Image 1 (cartoon, helix red, strand yellow):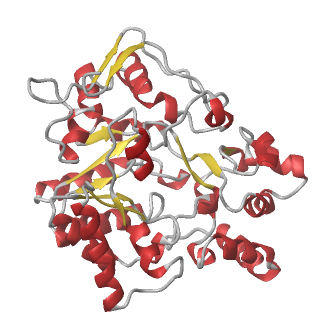
Image 2 (tube, rainbow, N blue to C red):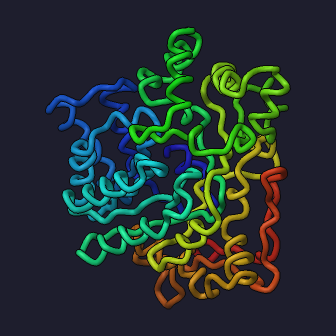
Length: 389
């Protein structure tokens, strides 16, 4: 934050307090529960962040060490954010076989803490769960009808991106990446991890069980220079190149890249994606960090959503498929997310509010980024003005 303040930034920037960051500051990466004194310190850190200007509390409960947090811990932290008018934004504990229970947990946190809930990148993952989105939408609609302020967002692609380490069960992450690598080196533990990956589970979000096979996993960003040639290749292709079984390839890639590899994973149905996008309480996000086709960032192989999310929605779901009106799409990009984050002077065009403007041609705007060639700017976006400049 000090560097951002010193050098400036080209966009508007706001942040959440990460529940995982708070947990790590007090408990580290270990799988353990806080004492009353430690929980009090965690609550104090949330208060400190909210006073500094955070928009709310966030959680990413699929990714270690976040799964070690019990619901009661999250309610306690969310309650502190609620005192300052914040919201609770969550990547839920499961988006696959356990999605309904995970959604129940998110709703319970909102009700118990008295805080609005935002479900990040609403989706249904896994072949067995294709077609489940109507039930997910119905559950959220029912919660809203009884007074729980819950909404969601989506990036509108059928592949997600996360760390390759998400394929590993939570217990194996206990203590951090170095201990994860040590477990993957241990033959007995490696065998146990393999067995759990091959077994369906509602105890953790088993991504291996959610995909048709290693051809559905594309290596995105790697952190070791020697692994750069693997970017853009499927796990099946890497396995063939290394002459290894796909799961051994997964394990060894994690070891080689210090468990920092990011991957795109194809595991959603288009019908579910479109239905989520169509809901009036769903806004649009790109779930990506800032990037550029030039310089050091241009050497990465990100998910195409980093470049294409918003033009893709305008091209595919507005202009071509007529799933949304242009007005609906623009609201999902602007007014709705600003409203959810309590940014009262953003997201609309009217006198007295900040002039954040994007000028585009609705007849030509389109995404050009693909999974094969993601570092490609979209077309048809003529001007971007931030704060009137």
